[in-house]
Image (tube, rainbow, N blue to C red; front, top):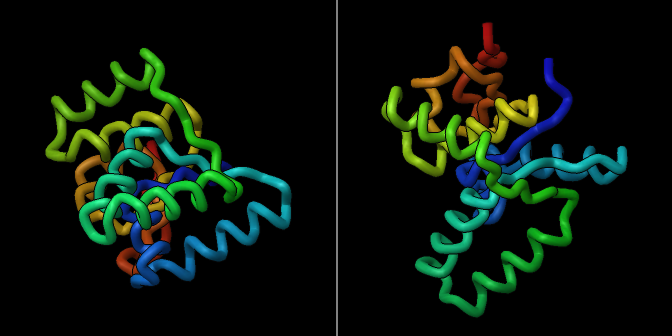
Length: 144
């Protein structure tokens, strides 16, 4: 099992809105803080969270939420050429959103487990390790 955890936008939104799975994300944040470790968040997923928040609560509140995210034990991972090529390959081969492809590519490059409840990840569950939110799945999908 990989020790690094990468939150996708589904996980962050679930946490922000106290939806099913929020408790799992909260536990990961508390544990990361306690152990002085960092969770990961791909910058494309941060942009996705930000625009969804703008649509739901307006730009001012969305900015406050984004600022709050940036003080948590989360490292925002910038897109590298390696991540771009891997994300493009995943998007070309599987029926997933581009943001999900970037999350998966970042997890692959960073050797991290994706934390999500997004069913789109079913398409690539054989390629990446996934911690499922919402009790959607028991256990984890593990890369061969």
